[in-house]
Image (cartoon, rainbow, N blue to C red):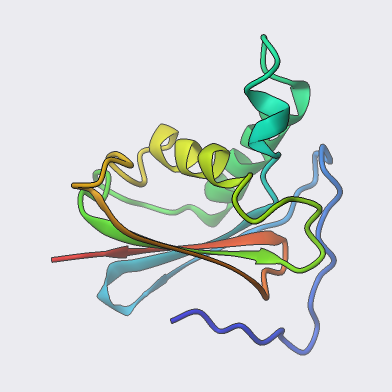
Amino acid sequence: MVNNSPPASSPNPPAAGLAGVAGRVSATPASSITIDLPTPPSVNRTVRRRPPIVGLRTWNQNCDGVLLAAKLKWQKPIEIFELEIVFTDQARIDLDNGLKVLIDYLRRVRLIKNDAKKNLRRLTVSWGYAPFGCRVTIKPIG
């Protein structure tokens, strides 16, 4: 379960494209992984343009930095799982428009095996507390 209340001193979310992006990763009991990332770019801005916009590349690099800074260790992608995604109320994105970019990123860095229905068993998306724009919790099943 994600704690949706802000901490006493909550950092401001970084502006898109800043090299000094902030984020946080934590592992909880039962091997759940919670990752605080910047808000992903809208899929509307990425699929209509070839090559993909610079903002997508920058967002991917910022997210890579979050995972590297956290020194998160995982052996292999999680095969069967649930995703809980929370976007901050200040995000300038429709609730569903950041999902593809975000889930594709989780696949690219091999946190999850696939987003097929045999792997991704439940997806919950909501507005709430996400200190850097987007909070993702991956909950393994089985």
